[in-house]
Image (cartoon, rainbow, N blue to C red; front, side, top):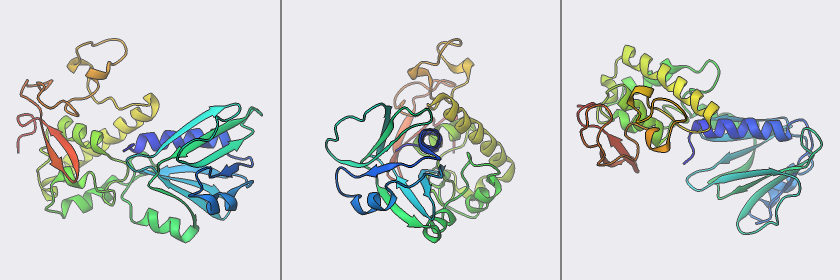
Length: 269
């Protein structure tokens, strides 16, 4: 599932391509036909992300998209390709310089037009998004600190923290030597303050780079040049490989429906 930095980049890209101009909205697949007809030809005000949700404003109506596990966008310039398969929604527009632009959406969990009160209800149930201006990390800690649930599960709970997925969960916990099985209430304010600041920095880096890189240069096989794929993470998808810091084998097990990765020594309970 795409994490928060990916949605942030998508929102920025779509705003640059379409905002301030009429958008031709269609649903070649037909599953979004009524919503497409409502938005077709209207001027797009803006697109913004919050956590793993995208919101596109068209006057008083808002398009809400959640990609889920299988959703994806594809964009391009010039004439769009022939519509094939399960193409839920297509946008077409003149683009910022009059060059035709398009974007296609396939396989989302949610693609719906909502009035403002419904958008407010979605936002109200989400925790703070580290990529949003003035995001309140203390609010996330208030929920973590009163829970006996394992912190590895809490970090994936979007009502606690919006935008964090499996990669950021595993890597953030490793970088701070925190066992994923540690109860949330044992994460003290000072530790969380350091984790929150690090998470904000990592996710902003993800926006800039278009990928998640969490390793420090001294822990990579190559300290200079572009970060290779095999060097990008400490524990994520490194089951059975030696920890980059202590050489203990990285372990994995399922937590809240996703594979969790950790080092049993660097992240001792």
